[in-house]
Image 1 (tube, rainbow, N blue to C red):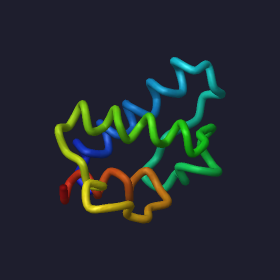
Image 2: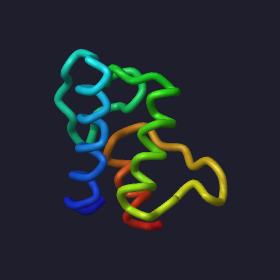
Image 3: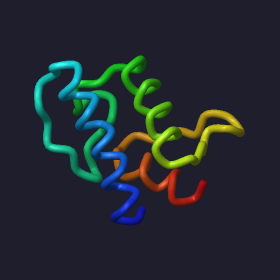
Image 4: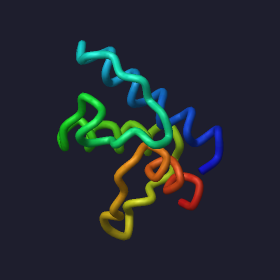
Length: 80
């Protein structure tokens, strides 16, 4: 995971949390996307769409790829 991809992913997650008035959370590379952060699967879907719009990359175009942490999600955008 590059620092720039982490920053983009963290920014999108942070924006979502703020825009939906969810409890603030520290977003770290090892933060679990579902369970640790105040996100559910619908929020995650919205975040993935926003990431595609911001980056122009879609690591899921070939199907779902399992990930658990913010860092693992960011790494998918490095390799897309």
